Length: 139
Image 1 (tube, helix red, strand yellow):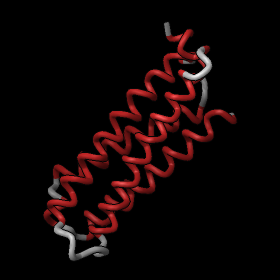
Image 2 (image 1 turned 180 degrees about the horizontal axis):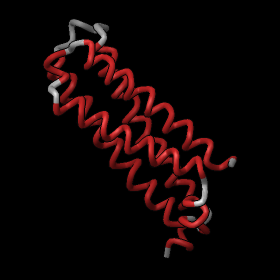
Image 3 (image 1 turned 90 degrees about the horizontal axis):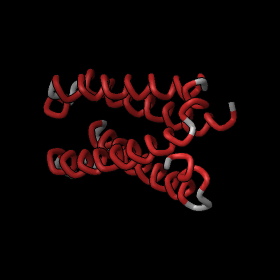
């Protein structure tokens, strides 16, 4: 089934579109929330913005993860041998640990230097994930 998915003329490209949409929702909303944490748009109530933003981040992650797993299934052997893919997976793990630390410590309530550092690190990590994702096909 997964080989047929990779061979279908429009199925794999549509998975890529869904993957890109998921990444856009995830990264765009994280950056929006980060801008608010850093003081931009201070008139926007942070709890409401965070609720909306993080809901869309979750939706984006689900879209990216589901489509990514399906794309992975079409060429698992090649991807597992690809160092850039491995780096992307390690960065995803780092992003998850960073997000967990951010939320467990209540960073949205504190908005202190550590919260800002974690938000900045999150954006950098996700941009590196994005870079690795694009780079996979060229290595």
